[in-house]
Image (cartoon, rainbow, N blue to C red):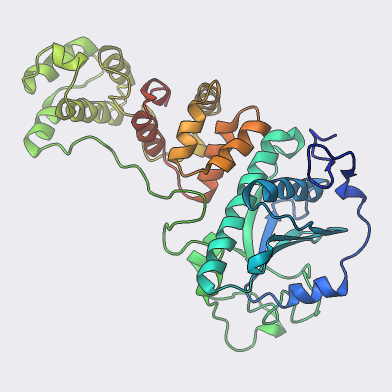
Length: 404
């Protein structure tokens, strides 16, 4: 039952003989705890689901995962306050920082109570956001019945809810079913409420900056726990004359790949050994030829170039701008299986910004941790095929990069 995240030792200790069973918690939260929740001065984050309902059994497992993470990450010795569909973790009691989870029928509310300064509050809320996303991805891979669960991180529309709370203006009910949620993409697309109703008279503008404690600003920003520094193509930019020479090489369907390579060497005055051990400038030329070959649907030429050049030279065979999450199932499965076969996935995870605690957490829990790494990072920001390819090459894993 421990492996299924149904129970855990209580207090959290390897030597404990008592166990916590979150699904058996039946007491409602106390008034003092609810007052603390109402005093939170930043908007709550909500985990919503495509089905419109929180999947059965998910919340209790989420609480256990977060409890175990608290022991790893924040070393808090203060026991959490646990109730039916409600939990409060005092993750940094000396700094007055607590995280509150409340499971409503249609969403899971996450609130951060902090007495610290604004900068500390933003850092902690983004750290919790990232940890929560990573835990959910981990759970989707651990439990097959959650594998197809689709979720999103949202905030409650401030126009529809009462100021300082998430109570509906019309019904005065916390977490009311009629409250609309706004995802990060929604906030970027529009900054006003377009919902009709008597509570929408007057100003409909949404001050997006009030949600920056949870979400990143701009097209791409930096969040806690994950690097957003995209790896750019490491090849040297090609001079116009070399680009012209590559474009002049005929790549019609009847041309033999070996003949094309010979023409390529002649046009750019390359010696045969230079392909087997290319200098950086030569690698850029080979990459340029491979890009043109892909654009003209000559994948056979790219495969031939991979046979005669070192691994990691040609760039990905896939569309470079394709999101990793949209790779074909077999290609994605092969990539993650190769990475998770040893410790290679840890190198990639560290390069993508995962902490050692996060890497150790995944290492203990999932069969295919690289799947969780790519899934969590891809949901946090746009993760392209070329970025992962270049990262793998930079990590000394060019053979795995050429699986893409």
